[in-house]
Length: 164
Image 1 (cartoon, rainbow, N blue to C red):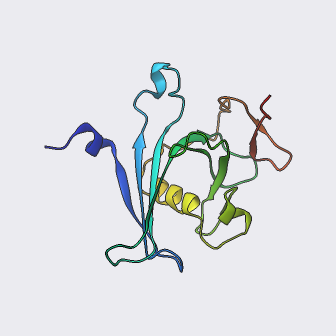
Image 2: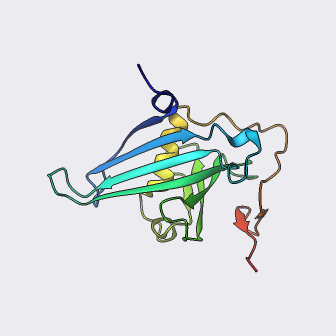
């Protein structure tokens, strides 16, 4: 018998890159999002696992993120997300990730995304989660308010207001 956690979790493999021969992702939706509980405004948890080789003893990197789906960005065909580091809650940087409709389209504000690397683990994992049906389609016809302190930026993407 499957547990509720296993029934809600969606995941899979990501294509290998020149740096990581094994990459995987898992998505767990936030069942408490609509309950109005403090600290539960995110849409779910995204876990990303990377391994440099397939041999025993190879370094394994596991990262977890709190994900907030954002309203559609005008002029961009795709989805917008904010990823907060759940592995290290002291990390204040939030990655702004756009996932385009076509493979290869999109951006991420992570170091790999800033250097325009051909692959970004955040964008790749979100693209796979979208393809697996982890996220409901965003309604294009009606405007959706942004949650939290997120505001449109000059570039048309979302940014966080400075902390005081």
